[in-house]
Amino acid sequence: MKMPSLLTTFSIILCLVTVEAQTRVGFYSTTCPTAETVVRTTVQSHFNSNPSIAPGLLRMHFHDCFIQGCDGSVLINGPNTERTAPPNLLLRGFDVIDDAKAKLEAACPNVVSCADILALAARDSVVLTSGLTWQVPTGRRDGRISLESEATNLPGFTESVDSQKQKFAALGLDTKDLVTLVGGHTIGTTACQFFSYRLYNFTTTGNGADPSIDPAFVPTLQALCPQNGDGSKRIALDTGSQNRFDGTYFGNLRNGRGILESDQKLWTNPTTKTVVQRFLGISGLAGLTFNVEFGRSMIKMSNVGVKTGTNGEIRRVCSAIN
Image 1: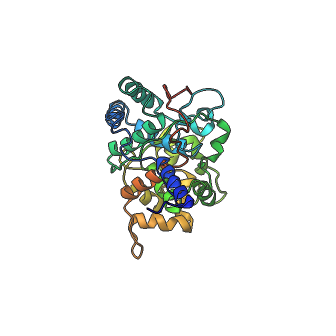
Image 2: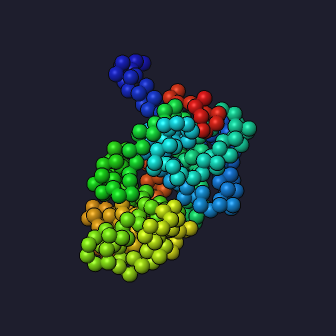
Image 3: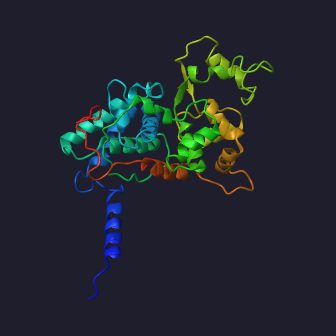
């Protein structure tokens, strides 16, 4: 029998290593078969008491993946960690992840990573708010590095579309992924301090508000967030549908009712506007189904910079490196 060449053997080994380094659906099917059920029931329990944890967990997963990859680094507590960075100070849901981790450590010690718990919890949060489910590839390991200084990788609420696209592209995510994932703002709220500047003295003409805001909507927003009022007061990101995971968010962008400046820019920039229009089913464009595309983009994002195999660790508690 002819022996394989050295090059062929190397190619086979490389292929096996590449496969091993990937996440996969059902990673815990034999080592901890109840893992996904435990996470789901834990998220459900907390959601029943406080529905705001759903958008909180979704946002936390997003913030985790944009810094050091999807490795649970945002969960680490301590000085100068990601949790202390300004964009992460209002993250919610750490108690949910800690609760699920404690239950899994009791059932399957040192098996399920915090990074996987967060990825699963984000999916479950979408389902609990009437979104479609998707299969979450698992097998991530937890990172050991968490730096406040790296939070600059996160897109900001005043950021231009070009800058947002650069930050997404750096993670292998394209323009459609950008619009789709930002569409996660269909659930949840934001604080007045992050957008009230758009309502007063933004211009010296007209009503003084950002001209991209529907003029008829300005008085409503001003009543919710009075000038020099409570900056911590929270209002819906998707007016009229803040608790339901659906495509109404894109209709609000079309109607000049995007709350964050960075969100409304998705409609005013031609490269992202086309994607928004496809979600809205604009005639002449190939339509997109938001819930379906969201699952696809989440799977793509959740595999950014993952640590697998012997890279990283399985934390005993999610808030501290072993």
